[in-house]
Length: 107
Image: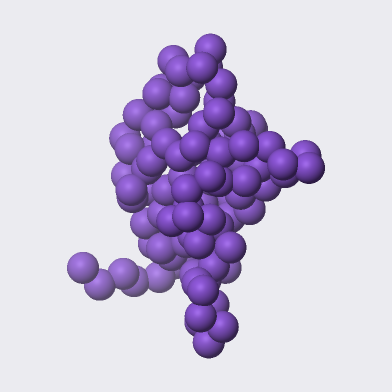
């Protein structure tokens, strides 16, 4: 089965597409797509790319283990669980612009 992951443009946070069309940081809430859902999966990727709000929109393999969505590729496991070094914390959506507040992003 597949999940869709991306980086939120303004915060850089790793996010996953959920069943209700939201993008959240918790991989356990990611929508799963089976082989029969290929058209819906591809349409979701296209919509995310067209929005201009997400970077590196990718389809990743995942499996359900003990009722939880778990990525199968090591790279995605690290993105989902955070850096392997304890001195760093993952970027989150908890930033002023993610909350709808005005902010300036230097390009």
